[in-house]
Amino acid sequence: MHDLEIVKNRIVTGGFPELSGIEIYPEYKKIKDGYLEFYRIKKGTYQINVDRSLGNATLGVVEGGTAHELAHIARDNKRWRIFHTFDMFLYNNWRGYETRDERRTDILVVERGYGQQLLEFVRYANERREDFTAKDGLTAEELERMLAGGI
Image (tube, rainbow, N blue to C red; front, top):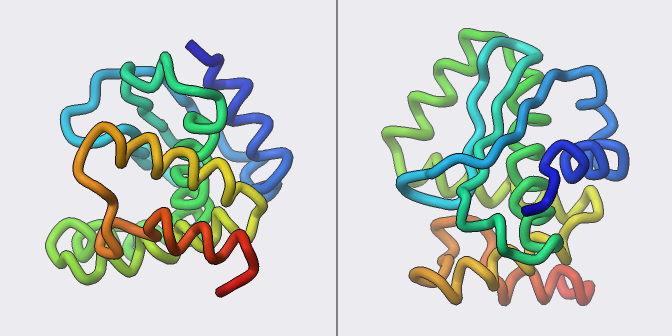
C-alpha cells in the first residue's frame, strides 16, 4: 500500500499549493460505491477516503484519484458553509449538476499537472467496472485528447 500522507503532500506541493495550510486526512477504508471520496469535516479540515482495493494499484492510479479529490477540496474550501451545503444538496440530488462538477474537477486536475495520473486512474477504474462516461467526469478519450493538446 502506498503511504497516502506522502502521496497527498506531494500532490499538494506540486499542484495545489493553496491547500498547504488545510488539514487533510487521507486513509484507506472500504468504500461502498466508488474508489475515493472526500468529506468536509469543517472549513479547512477534510477527510479523503481511499478504497482498500487501491492499495495494490500503481502509484499513478492512487495519485490520479487523490489529485481528483484534492481538486474537489480546492474548489470546496473557497465556499462559505451555506454555499457548501447548497452545493452538496445540488450534487446529491441533480445528476446534471454532479456531472458538471465532476467534469470541472477533472479539468482542474489536468490544469494543475496531474492529467496523466488521472488518466491512469480512469483506465484502472474502466478495467474493473463500467466505463466512465461523460456523465462521470472526463472520459479516457477526452483526457487523452487534452493531454495531447487537442482540447
